[in-house]
Length: 272
Image 1 (cartoon, rainbow, N blue to C red):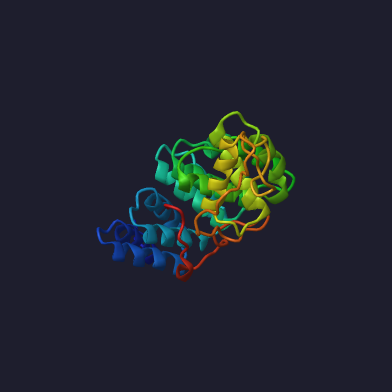
Image 2 (cartoon, rainbow, N blue to C red):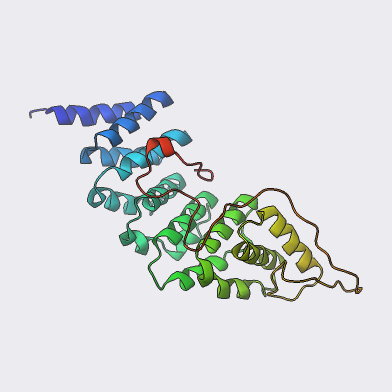
């Protein structure tokens, strides 16, 4: 069997991506994206599932976006069904960067509710990017059913995804704001506040929403929509929250960058 130069290059890329030094793996991923070759796709996808370094993972994603979608899409769609959480998360992230809506059917309710928070957060971000026109309200309903889940970072990710859906999310949020679970109600009210005023800090919105719920505020009432009266009739004023500012996210926008992001635009993804 004749070994071609291309075979040698593909084998060398595989070995470099398996190197124990992160700097070598980073350069290998950069090289694979600079001179795309369909033979690299399988190796790049496999490495995404196990790569421990964030910046190397992001470079692997960039390299995949430089290859033909006809080659990368089938491989990534297989990965979202992997038993390995990082494989699912990275495949979803890469699909969000490619931005091909043919991947939409792979964003299943099971992925949106994945027990691994990193996978779920990647699924939420990818879903709001790929959702077909006319299906935004259905996606919002699915996402609103997850309100109250997880800690601060997970809840912030979910709020951002709902805010990115814009007006389509309002009915689902109104329903969640009337939920019997106070944690769900508070998260819904905080998200409503962010939807109406994206400049509001997430911490401020959450603390205000919790105060509204604790004071027995009317279900579905968004914090900041007027003064609340506590049971004793005293003024129910809500103190300002923390100073952290949520990103200025308008309808249909997401916090991540667009597809085809270059290595110089490595974004700080949430935990990826």
